[in-house]
Image 1 (cartoon, rainbow, N blue to C red):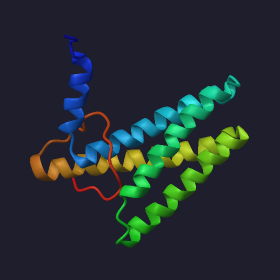
Image 2 (image 1 turned 90 degrees about the vertical axis):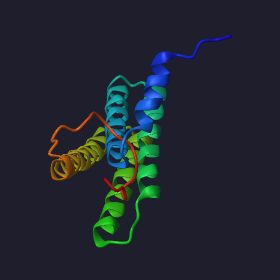
Image 3 (image 1 turned 120 degrees about the vertical axis):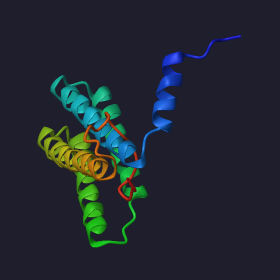
Image 4 (image 1 turned 60 degrees about the vertical axis):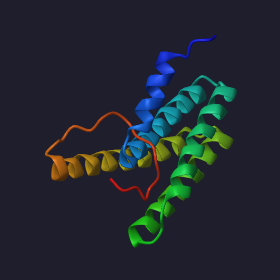
Length: 144
């Protein structure tokens, strides 16, 4: 009988115990990781690696778009920003455009930093805790 990978088991349990807000943060962090890998691949003229990583980044943005509840003006604006980020990621991938990739990276980083601060403030208000655990994944309409 094969033994389960304890690290994979730990990762799965870690994800299952994250709040929706922390999961959203994980998505932003993952998107940034894939954008940076894609940028490096563009520099190295590694087309396959670039495509693979930028497709992953695009899929994360699509997930954020699908899970975003657009019942407020802020959420509608976020949807437009996600659409813009997605278009820049597609442009970067199809045209090997590092500038388009840099624009997408900056917007995702801004979203991530803002989201991290929201989680921190929410924890302070609810629990008096200010530390934000590493990453998170989820959508835009997430309750903390």
